[in-house]
Image (cartoon, rainbow, N blue to C red):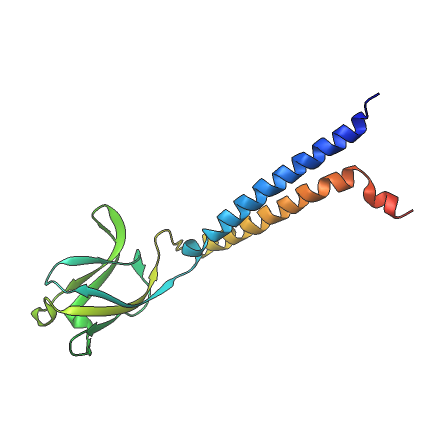
Length: 162
């Protein structure tokens, strides 16, 4: 005679194990991809050549802080009247921040720029950023519930109390 109860418990253990493995893989992959959505990034000394009246794409989709522009050859700080910065611009089909040299003084010069930017995919809504974090926490709790369900169903906890 076959022990069907043992087969049923073994089947549920295998099912829970597979569910936990897949759930943990998805949880780690999801949590790793949250950084660009939730955090701004500091860019230091990004180099580009200034071209008069030509928009040049820079890293990120938006500049969130004061930009510092330095002329590489002379190590001089360039004042904001010599360039313009625009955020959330579409250039060559991509959402980006741009810088435009507006004076001939730095036309053709090698420049270093430092700024804080919003990376591609950054969520500008504080509520959306909060909900995104909560989703990951609830996903982790649901994995824990899946892990505990066979224990509750098999009444192991009740038998330990006797």
